[in-house]
Structures are given as C-alpha cells and as structure tokens.
Image (cartoon, rainbow, N blue to C red; front, side, top):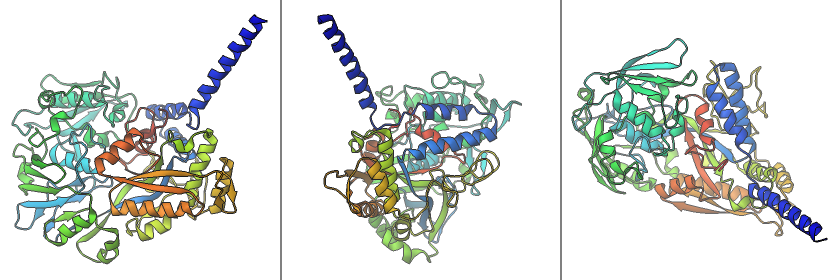
Length: 555
C-alpha cells in the first residue's frame, strides 16, 4: 500500500509539474515556427517561394492579434520660405547636409526630444537615424530622388552567385579628428554591431552575413581599400542595408577609450565632442534642451555642405514647437498640433510626404491582461479589440488629417514583394483573408463580431456591455505628444462602448522607448517605418531574439 501511495504521489507530482509548465506557457503563442520561417525566408533563393513564405509569416503575426494596424504612415513638416535643399525618403530619413537657409549659415530645427542613442549601431528610432545621418556615413546613402548612391564607397563587385560583395572605399576618407577612415573601420563596426556583447537592437539585420553573430565574414584588405562581405544567401536589398545607420562606421579608438565601454557600448557618445565622420559633428549638447552640430571640414563632401551650424531644439511638445516656429525661432519642424493641421494645409510652408510604414497598437503577450487565458482566448481578445477601433475617425480627427489610409495589415501598401511586384495585393499565388479589402479584415467597426470573440474568450455580457462578473481593464502606454494622446483617447472611447476600461499612461520619449522595449506595459502605441523596401524588414523584427520585438514574442 505504501508503494502504491508513493507511486500515486509521484504521478500526481509529475502531473502537477506538467500542468504548471502548461500554465506557465499560458496565453503566449509558441513562436518557434515563426522564428524558423523567418530563417527560411532569409536563406531562400527562389524569390517566388520567398514571397509565399513572407505572406505565411504575416498570416501568423496577424493571427495573434498582438499587432493592431491603425493607419499607413505619411509624414509632414514645415519649413520657412528661405529654407531649401532638405530632403527625405520613404523610410523617414531626413537629410540636412545640403540644406541652405537664405543668407544665414545656420538652420534651427526640431525633430524630437532628447535622443535615446547617438551611436548609430544602438539607435532604433527615426529621429535618432536622422541624427546619425547628420554625423556619420555608410558605404551607400540616398539622394534627393530617393535613389541609392555611393557614399563612403565608390562602388562594388558582386560574385556570380550573389554571395560575395567587394566594396571599394573612397580615397582620402577622414574621421572628424583628422585620422584616416578605411575599410578596417567598417569591419570593426559591423562586427561590433552584430556581436552579442553589444546587444544592439538591430543586430539581427546582420544575420544574412556568414558567421553571424560573433564571427562575421566581413574582411577589410590589408591596405583598407576594400571590404569583402560573404552572405549566406543572395540578398536583393544589400545596398539598402549599406545605407542603413546600423551599418555605419564608428571609430574604434574613441569607442574603446570610454570608461565602461564593454558594459555600456554607447558610453563614448553620451556627450558632445565625440568623433564623427559625416557632414556635421556634435559640438554642444544641453540635455533635454538643445544640440548644436557644426560643419565637419574633414567630411569627404564638405565643399557641398553650405550651412555651418545646425541648432536642434529638443522637445516633444508640439504646441511649444509650433509656437517657436511661429515666433521665428525655428526654421524647420516635423510636428504640429493636431488642431492646427486643417488650417495649415494650404500654407506653402506645410508639406506632406510619403512614408512606407504602419502606425499600430501593440499588445504585450506577457501582460496580466491575458492571465488565465489559453492562446486561442488571448488571440480572440486582441482581435476583438481591433474590431472595436474606428480607424476612419482617428484619421479624420487626430491621425494627422493628411490623407493617411486606414490599415488592415501590418505590411504597408506600396511595399515591394522582392519578386517584381507589390506585396499587399491579391494575385494567383495569394489572396488575403478579406479579399475585397485586401487585408485581414474590413475597415468598419464591428461591435457584434467583437462581442462574439470576447465571449469565446470567456467574457460575459449584459446585452452589448461587459458583465461586472468579467471585467476588462488595462493600461495604454504612449509618449507625450498631443497626436498620440488623442489617438489613445479615441481608442479608449471605442473600447468603452462595450464596457472595457482603458487608462492612459504618458511618459517622456526615452522612458517610453525603454518601457516598451522591456515589456513594462499592457498595450502601447507603436509604429514602424520600413528601413528598406522589402517585407522581411517588417517581419524579422518580431523574431524571439530581435531587439525590436516589443511584443515579447517567444521570450
């Protein structure tokens, strides 16, 4: 009998362990298949098969409900009549190095508040990318027409199988301190950015190179005149990567001279005066107030850089920013108060430009909001929330009123498919779940459908309102910007229509970025402007190991 009891006890303990393991997994989707699929896409050489797998990946992503697309991005800015020569591309990068400002040698502007990182390997924000472009450079860049053009390289040769690139460096390149800049600096910088010790958010962008992450197959010639890169598979967007800030060179001597650089890789660029390579160098920085960039005489194209100084106002308060612009204290701004847009649209100083990206809401899969739910129930909850959001109202009233289009898929309209066509389209090979609207659902609010999904997730209703027996409440995280807060309030109102309680937490830019990245939130406002024109850019960011996986998939 004792042996039987012992056996039963052991079996119960085993079952308890199994049950605990299942409970620990709880509502979080198993992300192994997604990670595997992204790896397959990165290695796929058949572009037709690659496109099919990317559709499969987006299907998986959208089925979780963790990504709730709101609208497809475009961008706005204002500039004074005398300002000329500033240009931007589809990826939100703004270029100031060839700007002029009438008779003035100074341009005063605002992009955002205090930047999170100025080290191009560590940055993951659009404003940070614009600052990286201002002070550093890559092998390639973009011209005013949005075309790729050589920058620190003069060209490249590609092997017949598309697996080896050899870039020829421009002669006479210098760092801002006058020291030589060669292919060896790029070899060091890429290995640093990809390596596990640096833990850069964008390290995964190097995973198409052999030896990723810690033995990257990137080799500079002995004289530093060429850089050879060996790939795992042909890469249709290789030159786009060469123009992306994570692939910019940083000065090894300066990086490793900073105290604590091994534990804090960005320590070398925390104050003004660090070594740069681009058209400007940061010469003054009053944190949370202003930054001053001064022309770099050692930049290879310095003769075409006309302005001596760029003065940045650091603020996310669009009311204060617009007031400074009106007062003549700023020459260029890229945000205005939402309630001013309609009055400004006819102004010659007001500009709307295209972007390739999506404004969306992200759910943290580890949030207590989904405690006690199965994977299917948690997915149903999130999909229900999506059905309650009135995207047209958001666009018409607060989204910018700038002809944005409502979004029903994560991959934006107009993005190429890597196979000669447009990705977001129905064709013989793939039809979206909602074929008529070419996406994953229609655009109209669907209260009835949302209620049915919430009932599937275990919630009770009294008519069209949640029962007090099964309440839903959560916190929505956003940064301090009138537009983002207004969108949050619209969503709050939409969800309240069925009795869901959503509170809004606002915080400054850096806290917002870090809390979202660390998963210290339930639901957060989010957005992604593509780094290059290929869907993999918007799909690989959700792999388990990606530094941009704010949803916390697989973690």
